[in-house]
Image 1 (cartoon, one colour):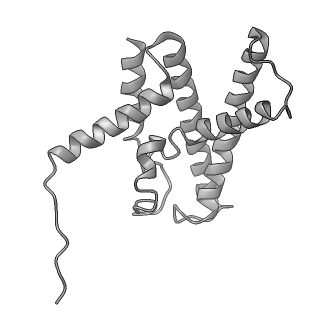
Image 2 (cartoon, rainbow, N blue to C red):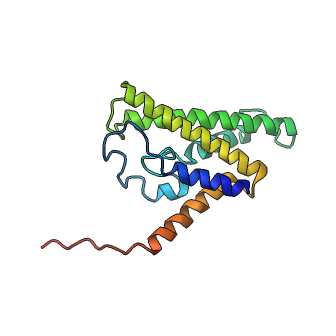
Image 3 (cartoon, rainbow, N blue to C red):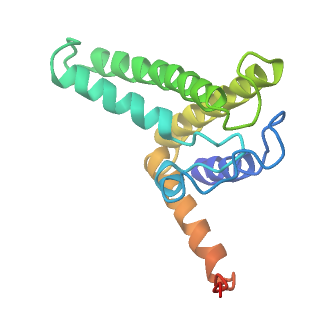
Length: 173
């Protein structure tokens, strides 16, 4: 039940557009196939998808594996600390990634403007929601939230493309 609720919430959030971005901004196919892997959707609250969670997880694994952070993951307390730091890292990575997207002009607004800051706040809220949904699925649902979101995004894309007629680019003479 919780997995279904989390998936429904995730799909709804992929349809909630970001407020304040310029018309047509952020809709390019630049991230194309990467969007499948990161379970993200252009121009929505789920623009960053699971990217910040995955990035924070990789960084934490590298830090613990190289003994820069002295955690023993066989201990329950250290695993809980690892998970907490990973969630905090995901939020920090989300703020960083959102700031980089806005600073690069991806949304067609200036970084220091009110609209730019509001976009960063919206993207960060999206990351907070994804972290929460991942936690709910991992704790009460079936499987890992990250895997479920990737699978659902790929399945949704396959479904929509199965019923979408292919278009060919006209040849130029």
